[in-house]
Amino acid sequence: MSQELEQWLIEEWREGYKEGFKKGLKKGEDRVAALWERLEADGRLQDFYDAIDDETIRKKLYDEYGIE
Image 1: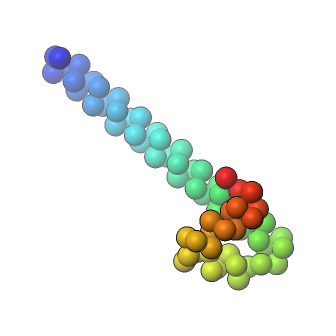
Image 2: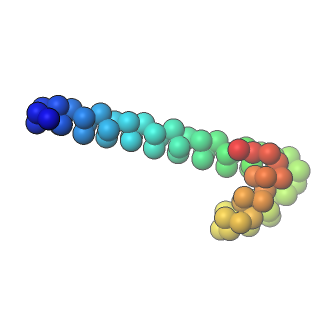
């Protein structure tokens, strides 16, 4: 493989990785926002604050509200 081709492949991989990371970050932010809105509407703000520090609680709440 030529050095130019190898460099091009590395750059393409990096760009794909960055794009995937951005999409994943956006999805995570959207999930948290959806959870916040649902819990706020139901008057369950303490559950939201608890979920911030506890992944198990967060997962339970995502499942409960059907947030993927």
